[in-house]
Image (cartoon, rainbow, N blue to C red; front, side):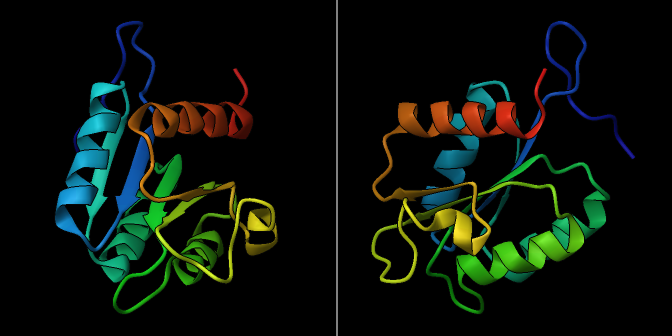
Length: 137
């Protein structure tokens, strides 16, 4: 097993799992997070993402997921992730959703809900904020 990437100070970089069935969006978010200093794992299939959480054995620090995906919606993925890793925060992004919104996101087990399209700088700021709340330094 390879060592987790570290930052300049030698600390382990936060590992963020990105899940979006649109490959270009998933890759963009993954690259954005890598550029911002995170270790990003990118999946386009929610079942594969769930298996990645299982295989990571606690090494996933945050999940950024789309809501509308074939096979499993983001809220269901978040619930399944929390069965495996209860402390992993999930940020859900969606272009349209009549179930989840920014106000009721915590009721669905979500750290945050963001409407698509998400501004890149805002996403990076929210990721940093959620990670800071999840594991204060």
